[in-house]
Image (cartoon, rainbow, N blue to C red; front, side, top):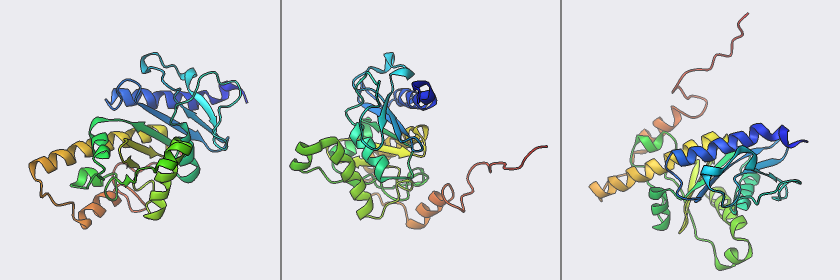
Length: 244
């Protein structure tokens, strides 16, 4: 397969990375976005340490989904977070894109080692509960395979707590920062924006009322399910008819 055959995948990942910057979620090079082509077993991800203002679509690095190694012919080193992305793609079969940032408000909650409570319908439109918080990695996990074990801790948290990655499309890593994901790279960026926004709203909510109550389950469920699942009715219905 020629590199040209992966141009749409690289373009999508390039656009996702640039959108992270435009959305104000990335400072310096503190972030990355990726996407996976499951049919061909390939992950595309931002190269390590390359400034966004000089990043080009052709710079996006192609990785084997199976091995986590760059495909033959790749000249740039992939993001140092690549093992985390690969691990999540392997463990979460429903996701197609991942965005990792160190956005200010979401990272503050991660550094405080707190999940983001659902204080209102803005949050409930995307998350079916709090934005989860994963445990810190152990010393052994950090020393053995830090980035890979980051993905394993995330996947383990979701499996242990019976969380659906598409119902909780983001997570906080204790002492670290957020990851978000979705069906595509563009959707992963959108969910990263949501995580940052609800993090800011929750911070302001607690500042205004330290005894603020979380959203009643009935309201949370209503707002989540009107946008997600078989009974969703938010937005416009897709026209599947054929015009002759």
